[in-house]
Image 1: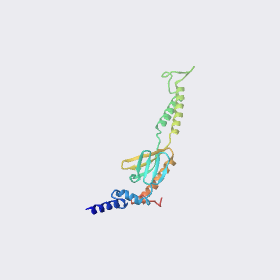
Image 2 (image 1 turned 60 degrees about the horizontal axis):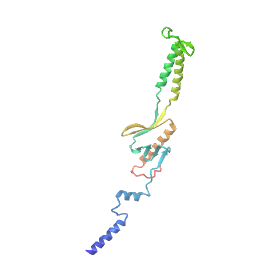
Image 3 (image 1 turned 30 degrees about the horizontal axis):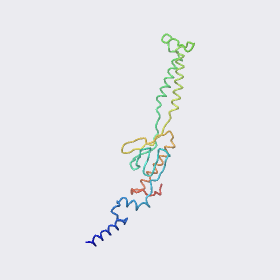
Image 4 (image 1 turned 180 degrees about the vertical axis):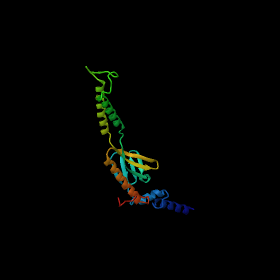
Amino acid sequence: MIWHRFYTLIYVDVLVASPNHSPLMSTSTRNNALNKHTMIHDKVLYTDGRDVTVTETKLQVKNDAYELRGITKFGLFIRRPDRFPGMLLLITGLLLALTGGFALISPEVIGDIQVGNDLVSANTVAVWLGAGFIVLGIIVLIAVKESYSVRIATAEGEKDAIVSNKKEYITQIVNALNRGISYIRYNTTGTRYINTKV
């Protein structure tokens, strides 16, 4: 019985010391240790240094992360600006200017209006207001511009993950996503190895 216990203690000590047979080491931990020389970290394909990072497997936008395997469709989307306010101002200004210009406002309906020390007819005021609305409408139409976004489609639906007024910035992100998707398609084993095609 004494020799049996001594043999058991020696066997346990050797087993714990062996990295290939250790019962204290999980299978995943052992596999990670064996693959540490062949696997690489997620390669960064693009980053703006602030909020957006694209790697070979993930799109990170601030606190939101999107796995590239879960993105079914993506691309550069042009967001048309809302020009209705500017057009409304412009049309209103034209109507006022035309109304005052053709003296369509009867003095009996709206009498002269005192502006400072002078009396001005309602038609003249309409022309002034119309001109002001026209100028303001033109400014609004010029100010609103197209914006661009990285639109992605996942199982949850479509969304604009990134929005910017700079088309080149969005194009760089889309190109990085293209490289990442190409990497995923090239590596079908599920293990991240160096992709010589990227």
